[in-house]
Image 1: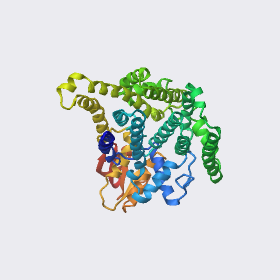
Image 2: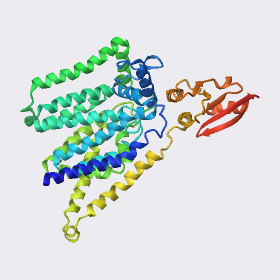
Image 3: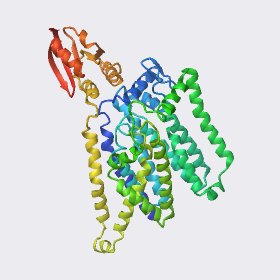
Image 4: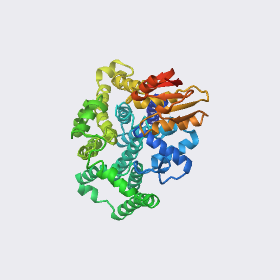
Length: 487
């Protein structure tokens, strides 16, 4: 009977998580495709869906040596495009699904490790209500990071399970998920390896007693073979790829500052505290203290493990010369775990207060307090999803206008004096599939009868000064002009 009741509670938690995550899942198509880096991946996926080359990614008909990450995410996006067509949903669905699976993984892992169902639920909900996690470049867009976080979380937790259960299947899972993580975003998941080694050395005498060298070497070499095999195959099909990988991912980003992304050493710590994990930062600090001093051995081990996943990772990326706000996201499941320890402790203490238990048939006080505690963070995430703020009005305006073009099969001249516009190309492809023609045209070469769309100030100023025109539509910075004649 107790087992049946427990299973029922797990199902209730799962359904509740699905219900709470579903509103975030609905609006994947609300925002237009972003210029950096989502649109680049979108175009890689569109070309892959056409040429069926699942090894080499292409951009504008040529092998892509600017985006040198392995193609696992692009393959998933290309397969989605084949099924769903060219649209934002096909592009972003892998990220959204990966984010939800990460929540489920966290829930079941903690429930299994501690037999405390609500601890897992709180950890998943903290992750879902983290500003950094439900954001562009993660669970809301077609970027690498949500899929990367899923695989890094899985291989770290598999390593923990292997050390504490002595079961060989977890060693296989560790190397399997590590391989998938590398095939998702190159060398970045390897940043967790020092933390894993530190945790192993923290109880070296105990752990080494049952480590078997042969399976460790076998699966390790298999992981290296599969990942190295991809890179060598890609190099054979696309000469110069390995040099581009080194320049872009090692020398270019870690050893030097690219594209102006120079920030102080404390950048990620400040970002987590002030923006990305702002609602849960104080509970996380309490969670570290509570977990460290906890009499429950599993809670203490999970606290130590989470800290060894978080701190070395953040220290390594903080020493990089190039810092971007999504590089710290893989540690978020472990931040959520630590914060959940404090929230769960508060929940348990409230449940065990004698006055509540004696006076109430059902002690609803802890549940009401948890509802109030999560209400504001969840509402904040819902507002972000349903009423997103523009991050770059000028670059987003033309895609937003193209998303909302009337269904008439007209031709539109797009004025984009920039030289790089994969975010616009994406919508040109979307509209072409609907029978609507869009093409680029230099803003000084417009002719009578052209319906032109422009968003850059110098283009709009020229058009309005040099042409007799009628403004047909305005969307943020973009304007649609009907060109009548030259002045």
